[in-house]
Image 1 (cartoon, rainbow, N blue to C red):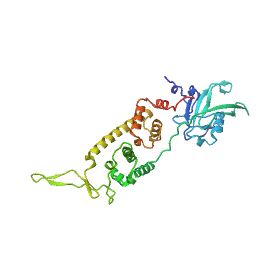
Image 2: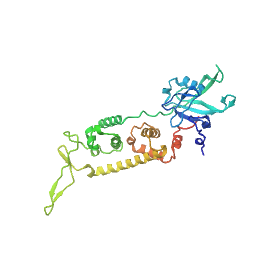
Image 3: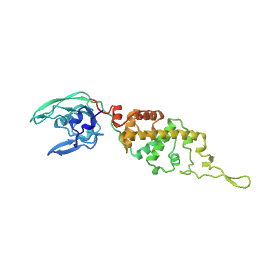
Image 4: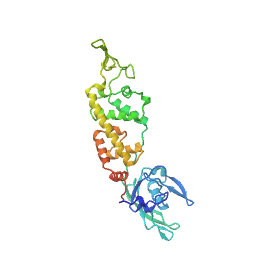
Length: 330
């Protein structure tokens, strides 16, 4: 049983008692200067941690010497903190938070930092920490749509064909359409689905699907019988795609992918807690499949299988972080 969470004090900051075991943190955005007991202090925000860290003057010396004095540039960098039981407050040993490792330094460094007493300094040694993966810059929906349109154009599929398939003009697309586009592109480029069957050619005279043409014939006894609608495409008439054998196969594949994606989303909600940040899902997915992920539905069959298998055997966020080496350690 890990009692780290039970050690958390009733305060608004990270305290030394929580660092009985060294922990590695990533600096988040939003750090700032504040005031405490009439003195100016730095309030450092830590990713995936609810309270700020207020480093001592000596530890600020370490950060400034290694990373520079612009705290905004620290976001995304990582450091390992531990409890030093020998830190004094007045005549008492009360313990304090110290830095042992820093990312973004290429070799061990020994620095002179402030010590207790006016004008006193002491040496401090810090080791390099392998740079932690940084969270990708989130792409807007519009950027993802542009990427999708460009990707389809590279394989000869026009935006008009996409508009017909989606039943909406390009300027009406949103997040749901991006998911569909990603699934179709993956189905064509990785799963071998026929592009013509999935995204049929459309008439150049219209950017919207042509109206269905009904074939009315006379049945015995004079009753009119209406056959299934037929799509008119250019000068040809074709049966609806859903009636072809290839379409059935494509539909089965698409349903399987949708089931996988839904299961993966449920696993992330279970591990990270709902509501889930979509950008965080993409970040974790990229770490697991070992390459950047811009749209979950773009992942190939093997990547989806790997992602689903990995998530299935994990219990919570802590286990996920430990699995990927993002928590604890010196």
